[in-house]
Image 1 (cartoon, rainbow, N blue to C red):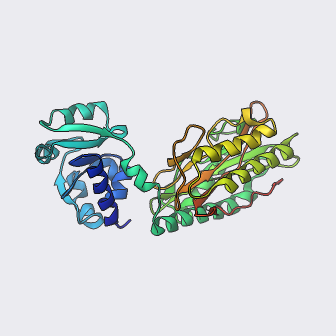
Image 2: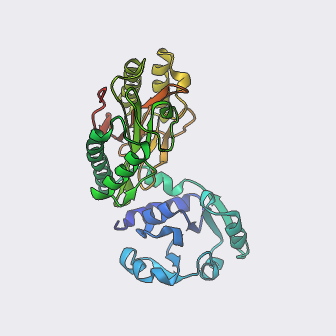
Image 3: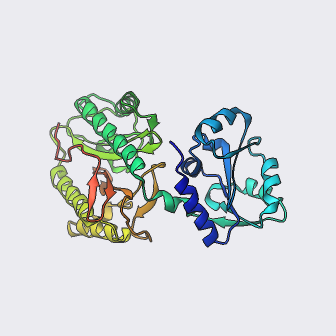
Length: 356
């Protein structure tokens, strides 16, 4: 992913606003976003108002040259601070990503004097929440691959198939069709297991009358896909068709309520009110959706306590679900791009009631 200089400029504006001389960046996703460096788990960045340094060990020297040539390479042992310690004393106040620094590492940082270390959160995440045209293209590609995988796996969902075998096939298909890897562990849960929103696929075999929830996505050029569909094996379980239509209605309410300028909390409330009307709100146990990008879960958050407001070119999921212990569950999820007047739905797989 080529590094966008405008991101550095925007981040430097944020440093000035927060009266910081520099920012130490330790989140792998934020490292990739700001520098283009793809091995962020083994690196740290120091961005000052005038300079930019990348600290990593000698294994990555050539990778730095290839991926982020405008950054000053500083050879540093894993978890080391020697080189950072040489750059920091000339700076008075340095921000650090409080959610991405261990206590042990913070103790090491604190020994670098006379620096004042200022915990910050969300500076880069706020920039990441609004996608560029290039990022949107990658997200569309990830969604398109997800649709292709769903079409390929659908004929394999039948009595006698195994949850884990289907999940493994999904992962194989994601890579075969162009993804680097899966964005998260693929979920395939059947029957009563579908009552677990993030259930793990196991050796359970599918039977006639099972509902089957599939939640998966792949990483394409660093960006995540995410979709969920629920189907049933004939004959569908009692109440399935009715509840499916009500979850589908709630999802459509959520999609219809999204546009730039709307609060994320309002979208979540609209979805919950719809399910409440049908007496199902107590079985909806998570937020309506989340941002998607370099990470599978990022800002903004569509939930009852969210303080985010939707803006044009944000990318979010809309995924209401109903989970009834002992019966099963139904979730329908799309990934969408927020537009000025609505949404662009980039996951195109059918959401019609499917009885296989």
